[in-house]
Image (cartoon, rainbow, N blue to C red; front, side):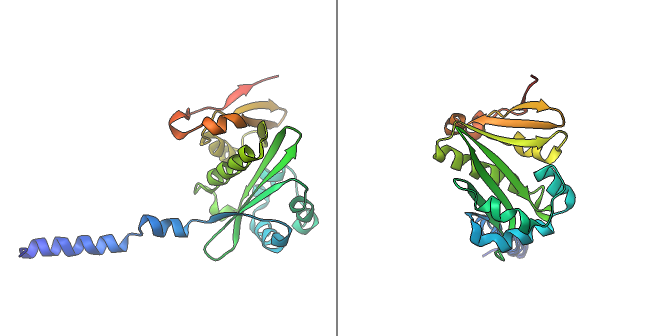
Length: 198
């Protein structure tokens, strides 16, 4: 039989335990990353319209017209792979794309403002890397604006060294896809961006 103080402590611990979301519950709250295509155009357009002009500029590097004018071509591009993160309501909150370029593949990523800074961009990039590995491409690259701190943070969490080449106001960042097969968090080196000026 527990003394009164022990009962109080035990009851408090049980209340705290049940008040905290468990790992499984947190996983269920995390956006699911799934493939998308032309049929998902309306939800993708809606997600773009919720993004600020600054976020769209970071992704496209220029002012963009109505997303209905360019997203059909993007989502219908032959050989491309398109992923989306859907929240618990089914709304698309991030999109990622792989666009073949001979033996290389270009990756592009857009996370709507309300979901930035929560690790979703890093998750999306890892999924894109997995698809690049499965697709057999030699190089995975992306175009980033100089000074884009959010994208620099995403690249900094890559599980393999990320190389970069600065040209004008932009940066081409790339990884060797073969490194993704051997890469692991224990082998990741912090500050792995390697600047190469040509």
